[in-house]
Length: 99
Image 1 (cartoon, one colour):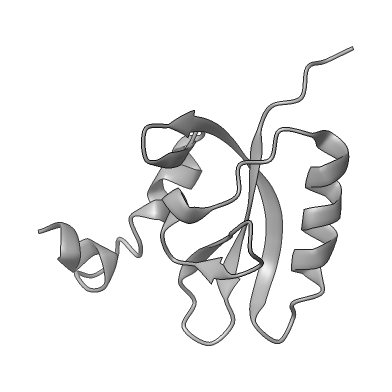
Image 2 (cartoon, rainbow, N blue to C red):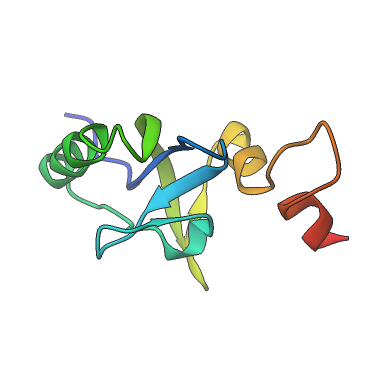
């Protein structure tokens, strides 16, 4: 049987389109370090169902592989790493903050 890989719940903000992550206290944060790191498969499915019912706030909720980091969860896949950096087609928001 395969071992469960820790996850975060992520989506896009409905109005602004930014990537957001579900926190342990049911908020959506634009900072992936605030995300809830889920280490149980059943709990991950419950959190995803909760997120998918937030259609007035977010769209496209899904589970993303993550790993514990010094400041909170860190993305594993390159797609998720890109999402933490914000839009790459122009310099604003998270892109501008890093400059």
